[in-house]
Image (tube, rainbow, N blue to C red):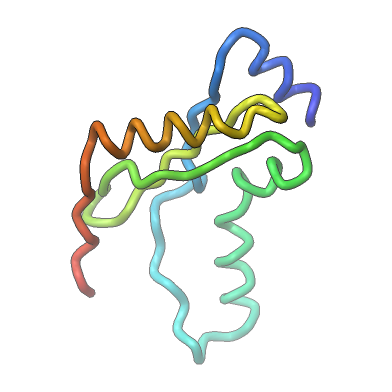
Length: 105
């Protein structure tokens, strides 16, 4: 996996991808079965978990709302170039400004 991401980053400074591979879902209730709560948590880490083991720096920034629910944008850099995704994340946040809070449900 590391080599594939190294190759993908060979000619670009960053990869931009969704933080999670789905639209936001409701948080399970505390009294929901443990299987439901664990399944919901594992659904959300598919895009992020790869970078925990590949060594590529990644950060997520709020990218707006979709149907009133938050959307995250993940910025992934080359290994050992941690400052690149952080600088781009900061620049994006400065450019776009604050994001609206999701509506209370």
